[in-house]
Image (tube, rainbow, N blue to C red; front, top):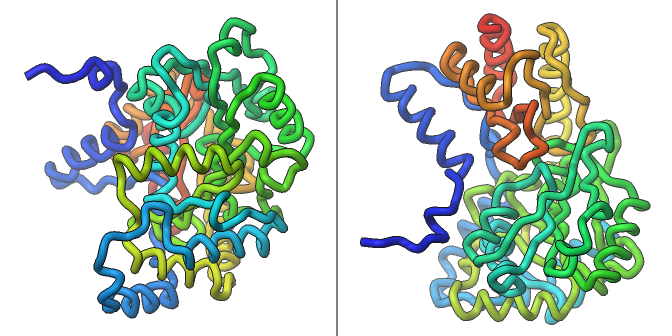
Length: 385
């Protein structure tokens, strides 16, 4: 049996590899603390669960769902964009339901990238920005993304020969894994750059609701001219603790939304309608749970930052996301430090290099672990240094 070359060319998926290593440890009876995957450890708000319980008993919801999402779901997503950001997106032509934003990212490559085309990808970013291109036969150009530039992807340094073959550009702020944030001036430059070079700009805003110290992450679509060149992805996963529900949406440029919808309708299905009904409750109901969630993560952020400082590990205090981007100690690479921590302390931290070439020298610490386990994890790391 011969698999396609595109499969052979894929690097091991980061989180699948983490799961494998943890499983081996647990099979040996070892207590492992995972600070790896950003999967909320607190439950989905009860109002959303209750709405799902009602919706799942509606016989009409048991039928095939709409590929684009129900009219009610798209209207709720559009209304949420208006209420949260003051951004108007047409629910019929500028909004599309997704089975999680990862699905939308992967399908964008099929909608826009032909073999040999280039996608501009942050030097530290969600791995699917790169692997999606491999599966579509495209190529990746990693935009420099360094600490001395506040981890803002340097799209303007892209060589002319690369730009001549580029079709898409990914940005994501607040950023996973670095937790960096971007200002209006940066977004405006990105819009103009995409316009000049005929690029579809995709802004992945999965962490739009997780901000600290009064910071409220913006929408890229708030900026003038953004809808001319860009779409934005939003997810219920982190804001409403709905990672397992797999429900999100894309919105923005109508032509791009149509192209994405064309791919989806040909090779995919829609979100289970009962899940869409639950997500409508997430968008339309009271948002106080988000404030409480941000307060929880901010407390954990402060706990971890204090502990890291105490053992001499450097990290910037994040203004958003559920991650701390920490420098590895001198003498270690990202992989060697992550391996050492797993083997010696039984703590999982993903190597920064798994997120792109500019992730070397860092590890990512997730805050989606109870306070006592976070404290124990840092104590174990301290003991093994």
